[in-house]
Length: 234
Length: 259
Length: 53
Image 1 (tube, rainbow over the protein chains, first blue to last red):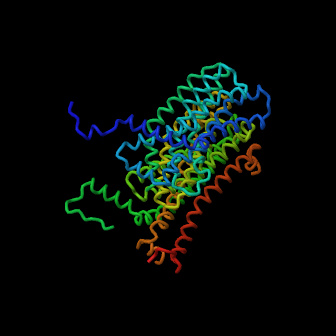
Image 2: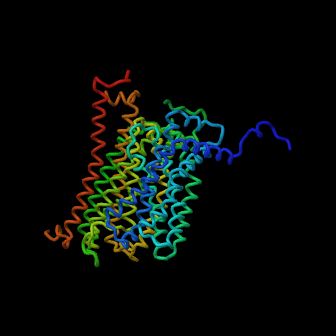
Image 3: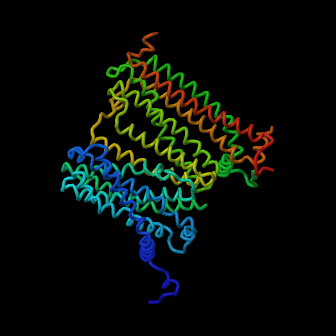
């Protein structure tokens, strides 16, 4: 098999993706204490609801899907701001956009790493929080799966917002403002999957719809994200 | 920008291209809008008055809802425009993004406040119609909930534009956001409808009736025309402001300002 | 005439709806008109800010 030197050096898309993800994870590992913030926020937020709405277990069970989902939404949303911030400030972002490797893959890898760090722990902890909200045992698969499918979609769409606002100095809650309306379908289907599971109705349909949204996000969001980053770097 | 005189006879294609170029020129558009915005404004007023007359005086009370149904003459056109304008805004912004046409960006930026205004009116009139009809000012039905999310989309777009100081960067970033919103809107509509049919609230079926009295249809159509003319008038006025602001150093603006 | 304003008891809702819409749309039309006039005045005044010839 004849291989030119150029093709021998060119890494496969999977390698590009894998290396980017592992690099981001390695960097985050050094700042692990910061990485626990979304998790702690998630636990705190969920805990505040019974304090505000009363401890009645029957009532909490009704609220549980909404509470868990909104808390997960906010937890992932509020850390999205840091997705590209360091890269923007030290100039790495420009290098990424002009890289010889497919930019779409690299940004997708960044979002993936971010999701692994910020959202995946939430999914794990949600099991215990479900207990706190009197979630029935048969609803746990639906809850875990809905979060597992929904949070990456939220990360992908939220990343677009992060890309649009990365150049701003005084951001405030702008990222949240522009991204939250876009989360509505994910929230509806995700929370409803859990709700249906609690009353032992069909929870697979909303989960599949959630999956469809995830697939759509995976295919379209990276391109929108690259466009967003390009506008921020003009 | 001088217009090239073609050496060969003008074909319809080159005429269309020249027309396109002319419209893309900010100066030409400024004066074009200056002539047409007031005309559209007068048309809007005329149609509004006609719609008011036919809707409030001529149309009879509804068999079920009495007189309160008359709110649909402004609620439905507002809701329609709120969605239509978003599409116009997103498409215009997209054209500006892809083909780098400044005027397209100006049009998109000008659409947003008008669209948001209509969304707000749709929500307020919807709430005021809800009270006599279902006894409550707010109801989480599919249409009002969708309108609410649409208002958030408009507000987010305008907030992003306001936060980015550079006009061009802001326009381009806004374009990405508007396009993402455009793709999302059908999904949002579908999910809200789905959500609504499960958590069963009352669904509005005002126009779901098999046939609508002609005396009710006429004012509705008149109002549709009125809001469209209004949109053109208001949007064109805003575009003129954007152009003056952005092109302030060009000669044509200096002439307008000093002349 | 009084019945016209009453609108079968729903007068408040109908007239408020029309009034709010009218005010919002009127403001939406007049605001850019005013802004344009202000802009022209601003740009034409001696102090035109930085960056002008």
